[in-house]
Image (cartoon, rainbow, N blue to C red; front, side, top):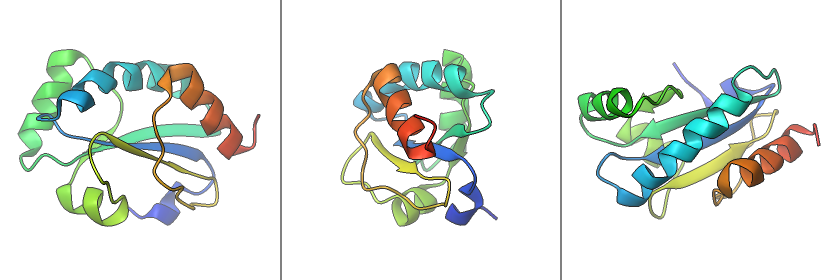
Amino acid sequence: TWTLAGLKGKATFVGLWATWCGPCRDELEELQALYEKIKGREDLQLFTISIDENPYLAETYMKENGYTFPVIVSQDLGWRVFPALGLPSAYLVDPQGRRSSRFHFRGVDGTLKELEKVAGTR
């Protein structure tokens, strides 16, 4: 079972997307680059939630494009825990497990700086 409180201890970038969303697909390459920059860090993490109804669509899309960042396929989780007015959508979660208001992705470097601020490492 996954919970927002389970993110405690690290600052977390959470991105919501779907395979049918053009702007989402445009952003995923940069999310992969951000993931590559932070994947070994003790203070930061990234995961995404695909709201595709069929998990196979997200899994296939990830493989076809060489994306390796973590993804949970759950329409219910995406809309219930991280409400989005549109896609793509993102949130930052601080090390205490508190979710930010909606976060606008600022490219790899800009988002990394914001994530480090949330973590208290910058």
